[in-house]
View 1 (spheres, rainbow, N blue to C red):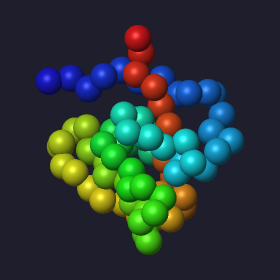
View 2: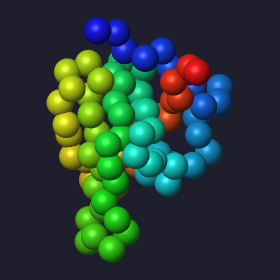
View 3: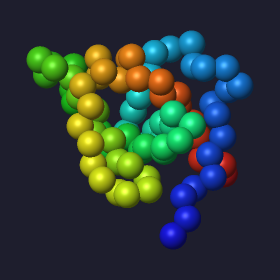
Length: 80
């Protein structure tokens, strides 16, 4: 199984913090790992979280959005 090829959304880090541009289906990387956003908790939740899938292990990980703000992640897009 191979991971999808990805390219950065831009050559610079996104001007928006990751949680603000995060949506289901988005891919995130820290240059070592690739994650796919499975879902984001609705704004009405007390602590908003994102469910991320590790594309290498297929593990699902719940991240509070506040933690994602401080993580060294950026949004990438699969090549078409």
